[in-house]
Length: 186
Image 1 (cartoon, rainbow, N blue to C red):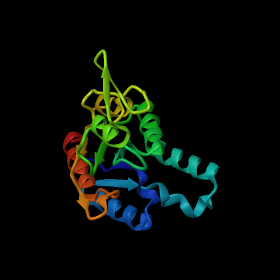
Image 2 (cartoon, helix red, strand yellow):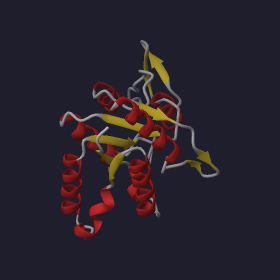
Image 3 (cartoon, rainbow, N blue to C red):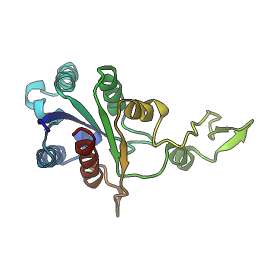
């Protein structure tokens, strides 16, 4: 397999040790025959400027041949909103997408835990705010899950809890995702 570039998306960039996590994931990419492109690679050029960060990340996504998305829930029951944008960006570009998460429960169950109790009217589930809840047995919102599946990729879930809850870095799930990507892209 010729070396392929992978855009490494996810809320990892918000962790206190984000650069170290990014470097670890890039090393794991090399171990599996990929080159990992981490959003903070361009940080010294962007100087905490929103426009420059956006453009640098879009450039990295255009350069990448594959997207690898950390979909571990971030600040709520769903994936990081920036990561959801990156899924859509790369899906629209026709690139293979792979997802991974350190939480194994489906979206519906996470919404119920956060915004429950769930009630049903005419078979449709609603949360405590009377908003409809997706119940498709998918990991996250159907647009994220279907984009990954329709691109030919898969989403890998590995339970990685510690004393503080799920691991946001999701290194075990990331490595499992790399194994699947390598196998599927041979």
